Image 1 (tube, one colour):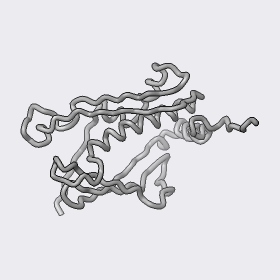
Image 2: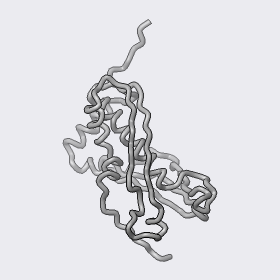
Image 3: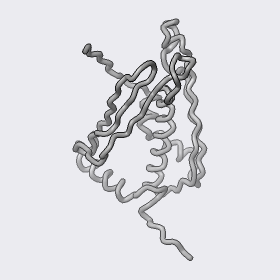
Image 4: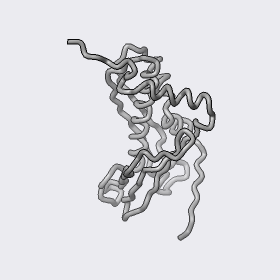
Length: 186
């Protein structure tokens, strides 16, 4: 029995929807402006909670999310907390695994490249002397990050690498960017 396969769906992605967005952005530069937002509140100790709901996309506020995503961040006991959630650095690594994966899948889908499987391992090396203020010669953040993606596909490693490198998070982490930190006293 032959199963009907929708040619618009590649890698679980509705290519027609993606192409419609690409066409809209190509014809209207303002539609390319997106803004993602997170609200965060400290709870206690190392525990804080982020809420993610509203965002701006393709020229307007998006109202499709009815309830927010809620993410907690904490620290392990060695850092004097209770390990109730991943720490913020681990969330960066999670983003660095997730974004190149999604990016590769979507770019492959639009190009008609089938991806059968992807699994990733991301490791970040951190010398905590910098963030603890024990050394000004040591970076406060990761000094080395390794991303290893194992991909099952007929596409070449070169093609797959090019697709993954479109990732926004890969660009943010690998290229760094200026971040303005503003503190407002309550």
